[in-house]
Amino acid sequence: IKDLGTGAYGSVRCYREIATGNLYAFKEIDITDRTNIRVLQDEVTILARLSETNSSIVKYQDSFVYMKDHQPTYVIVTE
Image (cartoon, rainbow, N blue to C red; front, side, top):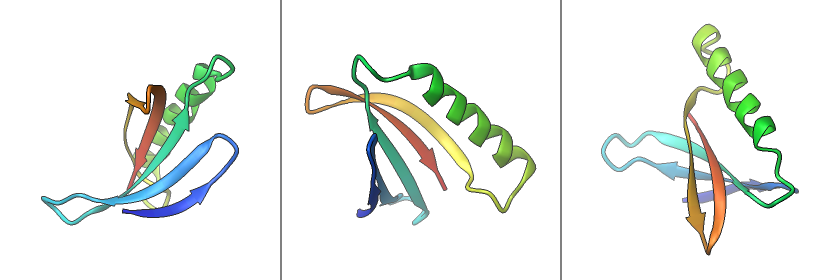
């Protein structure tokens, strides 16, 4: 695990998958009552489309929501 950066809306951390050794970036965005979920969904849609058509762009893997310290957190996973 390694921190890659922090911004106004969250942070990006690097994780290594134990089974494969692959590295992934997890962009974690805390969800508050002011969070525009549609903007997050749009970002995921754009990343997924770019991943399909351009191999030199960051490759989208997954997105999900989990509870982090009693706070819902949206995660976008890229390779």
